[in-house]
Structure formats: C-alpha cells, structure tokens
Length: 116
Image (cartoon, rainbow, N blue to C red; front, top):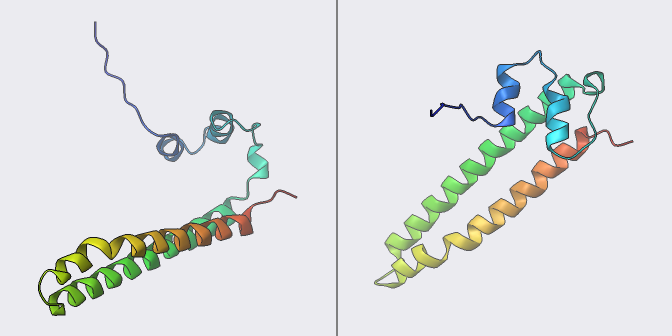
C-alpha cells in the first residue's frame, strides 16, 4: 500500500516546530556536534538574518540595474553586435555580483559567529 509522506527541508521543520529541539537535530544532520539551545543567541541570529536579507535585496536591485543597462546598450548597438552584447555580457556581470554577494554574506555570518 502506498503511503503519502510530506518531505520538507530542515529549516521548514524548524519554523513549524519552534519549541522543539530542532537545533540539536540540525547540528547532527550537518555532521556537527549537537549545539546546546542555550548557546544560541537568537537575537544575534535574527540580526544576521535581517542584514543578509538587506544584502540580498541590494544584490537583486544591482542585478536589475545591470540588466537594464545591458538592454539599453543592446538597443543602441547596431546590428548583430547588440545580440552579442545580450549573449556574452550578462555572464561576467552575474559572476561578479555572485562573488561579491557571497563574500559579503560570509562576512556578515562571521561577525555573528562565536567560535571563540
């Protein structure tokens, strides 16, 4: 007999069951030693999450502006060169934005990490 099983990510389960001991489970799943619930500073975690969300919004805005500039450049570029701009130019821009975003997100995370 087939049984339906609901599959969710650990983060979703954590959000659904806030009062459970999910941090210990998540640490075990990640291959780390279990973390004491009292050792986690939830205020710092919330601040880090808010900063990373703001960073993600700024990165998305920068991407939209860059793509708008590329579209504008493609319109004013004559002939097939406009298509070449649209075909080749976005990739270095995406790579640069991704590298900058990851570096800044890791910096934010490192500021709140307590590996003393």
